[in-house]
Length: 201
Image: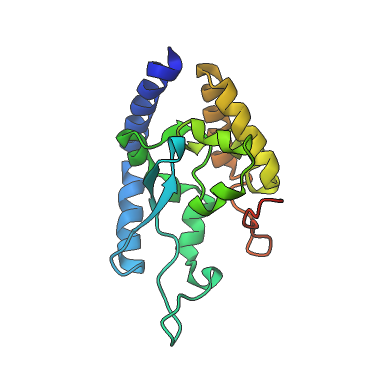
């Protein structure tokens, strides 16, 4: 019953509540990023959702679009603004995904939506992470986030899909709240970036 109906109700109720409570922060961030990013406050990217169906994830844009003389985008660490670092470390950049949740392409809790290029690299077991809707947060995120290797993240994702329940979602949401408050494991430093998944790590 929870998988078919209750989870969607929980997603809608909590998303609307958070949007209402954090609307001043969202509005201020939107205005600042319009100024810093030449009128482009949001980042859109196509990601695989449930059953690997494509959808566009939305985040606040933490990097500008500055390019070199040849028209190529500068490296990420150069384009990441101080304000961008702040909204990443505080997880404010994730807040627009609440609209993905309201639209039904994401859930509050589920495996994080990654990139289409990773799908051919998954094992059959790892590919099961796409049996559930992707989430803003998930079991992997409250179990170490960037500090654990990819294969462990995928183990957590598949475990979540197999054991999805109301109480597991509440546990993950509570742990996410605590981690955001103490800013634990939110992002690795520029010196230790998370390596892209290559099928082996």
